[in-house]
Amino acid sequence: MGTVVDAAKKEANGSSLTEKKVTVVFVLGGPGSGKGTQCANIVQHFGYTHLSAGDLLRAEIKSGSENGTMIQNMIKEGKIVPSEVTIKLLQRAMQENSNDKFLIDGFPRNEENRAAFESVTGIEPEFVLFFDCSEEEMVRRILNRNQGREDDNIETIRKRFKVYMESSLPVIEYYKSKGKVHRINAEKSIEEVFEAVKAVFTPSIEKVAA
Ligand SMILES: Nc1ncnc2c1ncn2[C@@H]1O[C@H](COP(=O)(O)OP(=O)(O)OP(=O)(O)O)[C@@H](O)[C@H]1O
Ligand SMILES: Nc1ccn([C@@H]2O[C@H](COP(=O)(O)O)[C@@H](O)[C@H]2O)c(=O)n1
Ligand SMILES: [Mg+2]
Image (cartoon, rainbow, N blue to C red; front, side, top):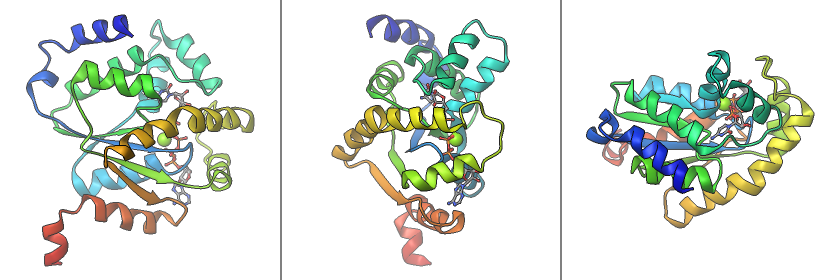
């Protein structure tokens, strides 16, 4: 852990991230629970910038980076890419963006992701949105997605679920113990889910006025 954190800390030093105060919301939930779909809605209504860790990793593969083959293999196997790699991509994306409000989708995925991000960036999430959905519904959604993702096949989907249960749910439990989790019933329609999401982002004073 020491070297991962030290290397990434070096990168953070002197960066605009260390100077500007950013608000971060982690968007978590199982594969296919609707994280990306709802993030697009939140961007439209609440002015956040959406950073999907999975999208950043897929872009890194496409860019021909030296880590590309390793990332591609990890994604095909449903495994979690080393935190050092993903955190660098997230830091760079936040530094290059003038916004100060970010939705970080699909991260942290395990305890190593969580601890390294907090240690390297010094950022604690404002809160965590947790999209809770049954495995049956998530599988149905992924198999209907048709975005040409190499990990949207039943063999990899099963592996992603195993990783989610064993490594990602404990991170959600950690934030729950800190009172930071807003659980959303993600089983409903896209519109109904967004109604529940809106309630989380709308300040209580506006709810009273409405
Ligand atoms: N509430 C919903 N009801 C029905 N279909 C949905 C709902 N939300 C999203 N979908 C559809 O399910 C698929 C998966 O959604 P999305 O890509 O947003 O999930 P995700 O959580 O980002 O998945 P991943 O972790 O694999 O990136 C998409 O085809 C999307 O259009
Ligand atoms: N923190 C993360 C996030 C994602 N990955 C890898 O990318 C795959 C796809 O992620 P989605 O969020 O787009 O579903 C995921 O299965 C992992 O292989 C990661 O390693 N670390
Ligand atoms: Mg997604």
